[in-house]
Amino acid sequence: MSDDFAIDVHGLVKRFGSKVAVDNVDLQLPRGEIWGFLGPNGSGKTTTIRMICGLLKASEGSGTCLGFDILREAAQIKALTGYMTQKFSFWGDLTIRENLEFVARLYCMPDTARTVDETLEKLELTHRQHQLADALSGGWKQRLALAAVTMHNPQLLLLDEPTAGVDPQARRDFWDEIHRLSLEGMTVLVSTHYMDEAERCDRIVYLANGRKLAQGTVPEIIEKSGLFTYQGRGPGVRRLAERLKGYPALKYVAYFGAALHISSSSREAIEAAIARETAPDVTWSETQPTLEDAFIAMMDDAGIDQREHA
Figure 1 (cartoon, rainbow, N blue to C red):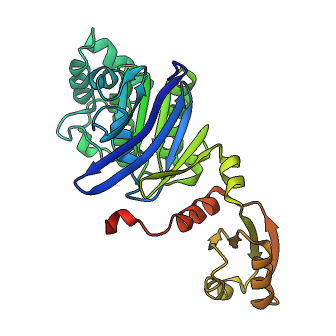
Figure 2 (figure 1 turned 90 degrees about the vertical axis):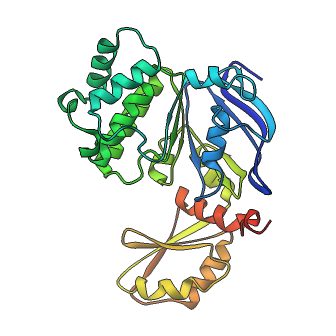
């Protein structure tokens, strides 16, 4: 295990009764990088994050987080980690300032008033500091949560679907802040369903059915998928969509803006389908597969979640 890694875990397994929620996951996350955690609901992302930061004890496996053993030194890991949960988990009947003051006291931070003032300013919350948390929109709640989990300057930031349900501008502002924190040396692991967010990460990890299926940069993941993608444009493209979905060799048929994307591991299969389902007002061209194309293909390859039938 290396000090170069903020997270260095091997063979992580988590069982709940007879169900295996996470099955033999390895993860080595270098310090100072932003990694995306992708996978369908129930794939094991949250359980893995909680094992890494000491909130859940692994059934099997070993490793370190920030140089501390995940099985024996959970308290030290928690003190150096910020964890933003999927659901807003602060106090709605307290103001923004009162929430931050309470969190600062939990971390036994010196000079609470100064620390809170600096945090409010850094996250642009000063003008709202006396608003009740329950009165905030989703984007401002998200900003309050990020302020609370980073005010103790953690070395590692774990984000569990942090931008679900917030507007595009709030998501963009949130990611600007994440990149700022990363430039200051913080390591970030974020689970997300948004492909544009995954593309902002240095590397991504894909989980399905409790197992790690892929890891790498976005271009590497797309290349490893082995997909070919064509796009169709024209007034009649909507009439073709349902018919094309009936071809088993086509892994993905979906709209991207005004274009219909179809993907397959076989270029010949795509061209054969296009030839059979031709329309005079539709033009086709080959294009680069997207991360979403690769994501859907990996979900298809993963098959039925056998954990549900154990």
